[in-house]
Length: 567
Image 1 (cartoon, helix red, strand yellow):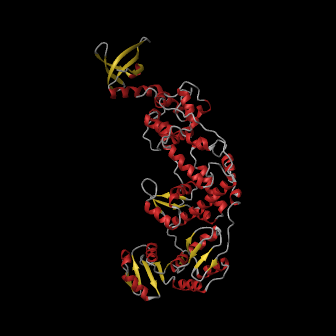
Image 2 (cartoon, rainbow, N blue to C red):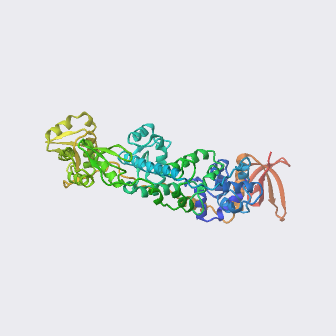
């Protein structure tokens, strides 16, 4: 039992539940920590492993304050915060275990602080172009993840195979990790088990203008910055101080490089390290002002050229909402200032499965086209729409099985012998097929096998299926320390001295330690004994008296103090 834990245990017992919850959260304590009382909590918080997890999280100012306190100098403005983290006593001195851990740590002398310079017009234009590319590339990533959630590795990243698919979807391979980080910061994707899915806000972001898109990403980047890069008033400090923001974190150089790359991709930093004018309000006040950025970007267009070869060309950046809808109907072939798209049977069938109709597609394309709708494209849409829905998938209320119907008997025959559909265990029921597999699973299996399937409700209405719905779960689960605090408070008795003495004696007996015991005598005097502790029970301490070489049994109620004697 460390005698250094007693002062901290007393401080913890006197703290409010809110203060304790903040402390436990900051120190990364599990809500199910197996502590019985505040003495357990104090010991755990002062363990070297617990301190080793906390010290890398300290900011430059906090580390400087703790280093000063370790050198006998007041921690200054950081004293209250370090005390709340259970690193300093209320008198401003470090707990001895903290002092031992901090002894070999130093503070970097190159604190930086050079003021940022405003980017030149040329560098600002390059930064704006990079921000635009990032926004459009992230839209490509999210559209892909909306259709097919990304599989996560045990490390939290995505596999090389997923990255290859994203690269084929138009996402720059070298920026995939950074783009995913930006998307997570902006809460546009969330981990859901071992999958990374789009969030409920993603659809709104995809349909927003480039300025609003960029603003959400920039604010997400700001909010996700670690404590060492957050200013009290909002925003972030000058780039020159970033390398030393967390001086005792060995992983910080790599983390800092990742953050700087995200800032570069968002156009917040120019190539030469200067900052464009749209960065200033975000850095100084934590406010987004996208007008300066959008002012140097090419104007969006809301018209396209439809061509006889079933392709479409946008003569400039197509407005995001139009681009997103067009890409449910056509596959984008190239992305640049002028993007090109191609219509296929599969792309139009995908649109119909997503809720579009023949009329809605023709109306949308007619409103976009500068050249009308070419006859080959119109014919393709009409033919695909006529074929779509030939296979109807529904749930049979009477049997509880999935039913597959079609007016085309040849399709029924083809599905019955299709080897790719064997897992569905399809069986003939008159002119229909039936399966014990769920309705939605059957529908998607038929769709993947390129059958013109439609999902139908019990009343015969056509349903729109969402294969991968957006996740609505919380970004992070906040630990509930209420049960732990209740357990600690329940053991908080009026006689802390007696409780502490019991723990000291139990620890000494377990360690077979030698104790110097101060015993109260009947006449009011005290006597010091040197005992080798051998047992504790029934309210009595047993041990061998080193001086008299005899066994003694002392009532614990008579012991005024006890401490371990170093051997």
